[in-house]
Image (cartoon, rainbow, N blue to C red; front, side, top):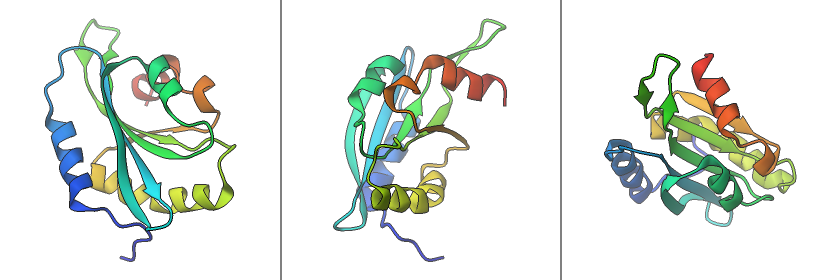
Length: 140
């Protein structure tokens, strides 16, 4: 299968390490972007124990990102779990060519990250809320 964007081993290693990290509280995030000039994925930053609101403020309002999120999910029966969620951060204010490139690589990145739940965020920080993620995870 042809791929538009290369995924370096360092990204695969970061994803694996992130996936298997022990979490006992809060949400953690691994932010990945596409280097448009080199057509390669790059790690931007990792956050531990970050609120969804703070994460939303850290993400650029005019550039797409893939965010692998270990999310602290509180179930109605009192349990707490930490599912992995892929946030497809694709603000509508982004450059069209970058959004297109980002969209074309999403499925391959989702497969590489081994994440089944995807939350699409197009509205920028206002759209990335606990409520939006809870709605996707608790009702699907």
